[in-house]
Image (cartoon, rainbow, N blue to C red):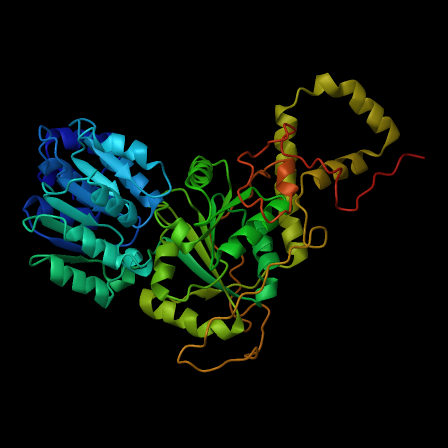
Length: 519
């Protein structure tokens, strides 16, 4: 359905066109007319389906721009999502001069108080910080006409339900309420019954919980093997932009610093980082200055980047609904995506529960060998060398090149260059990831370490080595800093080539490779 069929004003239609939207997504096509008609709406939609515009456009259509009171309130579970939502509403409402402000924890509250004095018509915020402003009387909600609860199931998981109810009690009873959630647990349904008036339901069918654009695989691997297996997949698949999900903050730190130590351009985010550092890392990832983002579920909530090609579930989520949120980070805006989930033998029950929810049977993948990973690395290294040759003014280095060729074999010189642009493997840089307590077996049964281990986890089944349409790309590392294996350095260095030498190793090479002089 076209946006001009939804009853929006010309100014909003211009903003929609400027933002690059062409046709309304299903959630937008069904929700926008209902909201414009004044109805309460419950939308069950995963991240990436366009739900922000589904509530932003009718809000911008209905608010009175000449009224300086807060008329619409959007509650978001995380700082990142709140910021992105505010930016989206501001972008769509720019032509109509809508005043939109965002408030969230971890930032200077005095600046937010100053911003709220500028009379915003729309406020977006996280539950805790919104309550702070309400209690300080710096945010007055007595003129709010529209309330949006975004990613309500995630706010439930984060323990915000009481805060949300406290916020709702501060609002006028005569208002319009919209609730969006990827899943619909009983507690969220109760919110709908208690605080909404005859809400209309817009629901995505279960078969659409994970899009057909995402190829979903699983890899059976023991916990202590996961890291080496994952990095071999990185080498074979050459993903462009990747998110690695882990269960704990400690694993974010260990995995991100381990990836840096092996030469991958990676950084990690979790709730213990300062807001400034989290924003810095997210901006680097959003602008392609990081290849791999390692994150916990909570820290990654609200990541809204269309170009993520791969999601790796280093730890299988305990809650199947979390899987839907995770893989929804890829396969967006009509683009192809790949999801890979690492499963220990005693976690197969969790995998089956995910498959029941998503109605998708994940395909098993056999881990690549070290030899296969090296072949892929060398292919990428060759591409890098070819690119270097094409960019280099060879005349400038002709005399030194002749001198080296006179002293060494050409084959050895090329091999040394390939060695320099190839990442370290596990034998050169061992990485130890602290074991986590295994998930309890479903049904409450105790479990041991049995269950039989099959290297590929597929019992001799199909070997989907490629995992989608992959291509080799240039070796993109973070420079000499990326070799630091200090677990505190989980934030990355913010640059692909911070050492100014094109990202090559500054450690003199660690592959045990020597060049023999000519006799």
